Length: 192
Image (cartoon, rainbow, N blue to C red; front, side):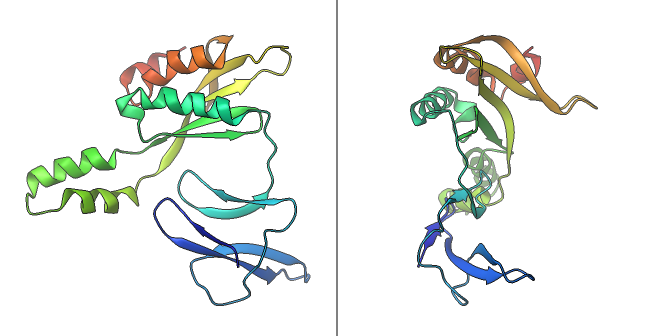
């Protein structure tokens, strides 16, 4: 039986069902009843979205290495405002997802108003209501012999709602150090 525990601590079970045409379909559920699957089907992988949704999806190839994703995660840790951000590699890009609010900071503010509340427990409850949105990505350029990336930020100015390039292409370490420090700050919206 395949199980998966997401970052909120919820345990999910992989089930098999049937489509209307009789083909197998797979899904995760927190309920244990039904037809449980003993192995992940070939060509599929268990995936947890930035918002803690657990899915079985077709294996997504990525040209980005785990070391490159870790480099972005390390740059995020240097920024106090982005410490809860999630870096995810998919295809030719590493996307940085930012939380809608900081549960620890919000819990501290609420505890100040309601001193009888347990801050750790409150932060845990608040963590479940955080929503993650893509805010920045580092795209591996296809035409370079060296591993050159382009930084992009999400632009939500009126009718644009799309990725826009910021800065010049360069090494991932340089770009992550240069741009991750702006996440969660007003200076992010000034990046061009």
